[in-house]
Length: 98
Image (cartoon, rainbow, N blue to C red; front, side, top):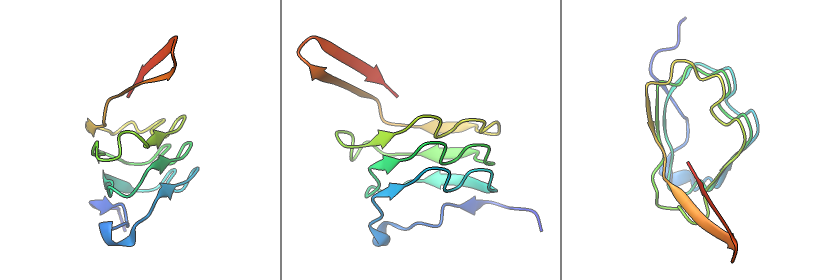
């Protein structure tokens, strides 16, 4: 049976804090609307998945971590909404990232 509009199986009520390495890699998940409780997206979490739409709010902008390759090889991705972060780690080092 083909995957159709498979959503990330996490609701806001579950209070999930993290989704860790390779959790949904190579799956048929199509849409990701991340609960505000999530502050850590691990390495290669969605690698090679069928994601088409991703929405991550900026509610936890100060603590949100999206690790290396989280969306690597998501070749069907059409709509991506991520918070912009720009922080100073030290007085002389500033980094900007999506």
